[in-house]
Length: 201
Image 1 (cartoon, one colour):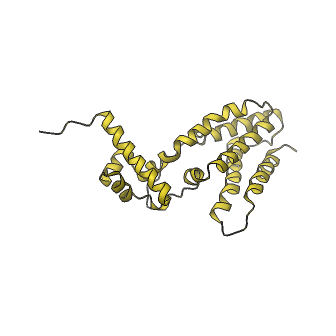
Image 2 (cartoon, helix red, strand yellow):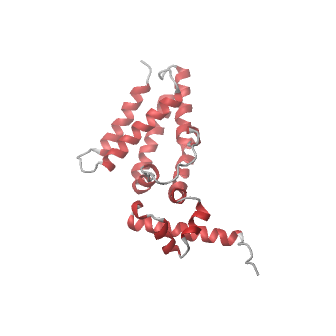
Image 3 (tube, one colour):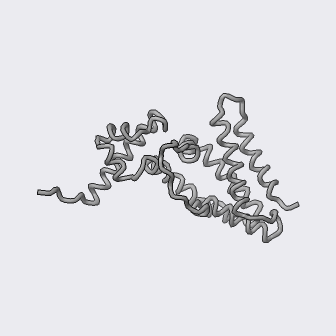
């Protein structure tokens, strides 16, 4: 007699067990030890079960930090709505990103410094505006351009430059930690530098 199909409760329980195993391994051994086999052994499931429930190891890894990132992005409207001037809005947006990275160093490392292995599958590309942070950057740049306080240009590309510059200031001291960086000063100064970059002359 064939086995009855799993209920949604059972499916959710297996997903939760796999995800919890991945969280434990990530916390104990870091991202480099987050393999499908290690997760399967810890969760007590077959390797194929991981791919059945998550599609790929990259997708599973993404779920480990997606919640906190979503909460950060959901907090942005309340942060920027306190400021009407585009320059100030842009400053608090950039500063909020730096603050998030500093308060959540391990999570930031996983969510934003994760390098996909060459043999793993490429995720489906999404528009830049699917990131709330990027969306707010673009909208703020458009407001500033309309007001004449920001340089004219493609706000989508400008938002990418701002995000890339800020990310670099956070990532370099982490990735090249053999060098004597001044990470806190670097991040703060980068915010000011980026604001000067887009400011209208």
